[in-house]
Every structure is written in C-alpha cells, then in structure tokens.
Picture 1 (cartoon, helix red, strand yellow):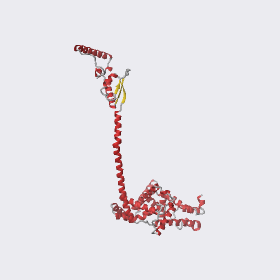
Picture 2 (cartoon, each protein chain N blue to C red):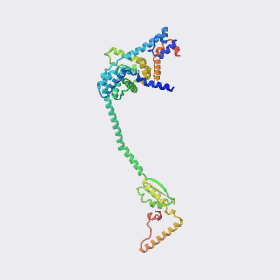
Picture 3 (cartoon, each protein chain N blue to C red):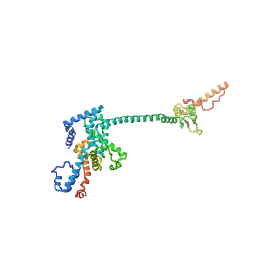
Picture 4 (cartoon, helix red, strand yellow):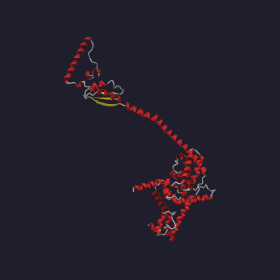
Length: 216
Length: 231
C-alpha cells in the first residue's frame, strides 16, 4: 500500500515536467526572457506581455466580475500589479499561471474593497448602466449578453464553484488542469464542479415532468 | 436507463463529454422530455461559453501597458511617501515621549527616591539611646528624624529617605553584630569593666579638681556615651 502511494505521488510529481512539450518550453523561455527584460525596465517588453496576455486575463477576470466593465477594471489592476512585481517572477513556472494567480488575488481584493464600500449591497440590475460604447453597437450587445450570462449563471454560486465551473465547463480545461491552475486538490475541484453544475442546472431540470418525483 | 437516472446524470455530469453512444444519449433518443432537456442544457452552456470566450477586451493593450506603468510608478512613490510618513510619525511620537513623558517618569522616580519612609529597627544588643547616638549624624534631612522609645522597648524608629534608612540599618547591624559588645560580655567581665570605668572616672575627677575644671559630662547623646567595648 505504501509502495503504491509512493509510486502514485512520484508519478504525480513527475507528470508536469514530463508533460511539457517542446512548444511549451519554448513559450516558457520566451516568457521568461520578456519578463526579465520588463523587470530591467524595458517598456516595449512589458507592452508585448500585455498584448499577449490581455485577452486571457480579461477572460479570467470575467469569471470573477459582475459584468465586462468590472472585468476591464480587474484586467487593468492585474497589469499594474504585474508591472510592480515583475521582478519577483521566477522563470521556473509559466508566466500564464503566475498572471492567473495575480488575477485571482486582484479580483478577490477588489471585490472585498467594493464590498467594504457597500456597493454590493445594491443589486447589479439597480446600478446605472455605463453608457461608454455607443460607438460600437455590436460590441455593446455582446457585452450585455455577457453580463446577462454572468448574472444568470454565476450570481448564485460561491466564488470557488464559479471559478471551477468556468474553467472546466466553459473554458474546457480538464479537472486536473483546473486543480493545477487554482492550486486546489483534484478532489476539491470535482466536488466544487459537482455542486456548481447542480446549482446551475437545477432551474432547467425543474421543467422536466419527472424532476419533482426525483427531488422528493 | 430511466428518466430519473438520466436527470441525475444531467444534473452533475459533463455535457461536453456526452458521446453519441453514451447511455444518456441512447435514452434521449427514445425520450422526448429528456432529449429536450439535454438539448436545452447543452445549448445554454455552449452559448455561455461562446459569448464569454469570444468577448474581446475593450481597452487597447498599449494604453493598458502605459497606464499600468504610470500607476505602478505612482504607487511606488505613494508607498515611499506612506513609509516616510510612518517613520516621521514614529519619530514624532518618540520625541514627544522623550520631551514630556520620560522626564515626568524620571521625576516621579526621583520623587519616589526622595520620599520619606518610616522604619522601626529592633535592637538586641544596643540600647535605643546608643543606637540613636550612632545614627544621629546620618539622619540629617529636613524632615528626617528618629524616635527613642521611652517605655523601654528595645527598638528605634527612624524616619528618612531610603538611603538614610539603609545607612542607619547598616550601622546599627554592624554594631549589633560586634562580638566585643558589652551585652555579650559575661557578668564577671561586666563587673571588671564597671570597676575599670569607675576607676577611670575617679581619676579624671581628681585631675579635674586639681586643674579647676568641671567634671560634668556633656549633655545629650554623643559618641562619648557609646560603650568603649562596642567598637
């Protein structure tokens, strides 16, 4: 039993390094180079990092935010922190994972700050819509749809479940990858995913004729 | 597969991994309600994923990078300002304490040092008058004093500062411990001593009469009254 556990742990520890492809390593090396240049004060290297990762950071921010505008704020905050802390980035991990952690932390802190200010006491619908993209009607429609999806899907979920559901079911990561990204145990990821799916699908499932009998 | 099993599977299973030949899909092929529900759930998640994954950020990356650099610099300066303010605050408090609180504490301590205390020192060998003679030169403060009991109790009460009390205590203890003190002599030794003293007194009386001087001893407690054997 002990031997089995040891082997299992050894395999788990060895798996991330072994699973790296040549492309991954090349990407890591490029990221590390960009990060070291940015840390040395090279503005163009930092702009390259922002250009490369802004869509990903914005997408991650969407799962923590109430609407796309808040996600924009989180994205800006993430890059401010990245600029401040880029010297602390160690090249042994991927820059993407490092940025994900910053995004998570920034979003959590911004949420806490806004909670402190009592803004969350108001319902999202009660807040005035920010009329800033009138020049792009298509974009506006997309954003409103995104906001309604966020409200519909995520408003009832705790942050951890929301994050796991988004990573696995909407972004298409495997539970193991989501566990690696969030630093959670795979078991916890599966448990959170199970609960999130149940909460989200419950209202639709309730329309099925035999659901009432099942829920009894 | 029954409808209940199908709903249970749909409630928590992954809709992405539903293969065409999976038990749920086989059931859905024959059950209209479950098929509708499965389509509804898959469609909803697909739409959500599409909308969220394809939504581009509105800000220009170059602007974001420039703003990040600017804000980062400002925050760094702000951090330094906060740190400097904190240091200034600590220094101000320290100076204020050094100027006001510490001298006050020192004066309180000095007051404590100069405060008068009263202590009664028990005597085993010396008489209270002898003890008073010993400590008299050292208890000289403005309000310092000593009391010699008139009822024959073998003790002396001293009122003075801590240093005066300590000095008096030490002196009395020193004389009390002396093995050659009169109180430690045997009765025979005491008689001999008295004889010797009376002899010396007689001689001095005679010599005083011859010289025309008074033989009255000086009044008050003085070092002459200390028995010669005490030190």
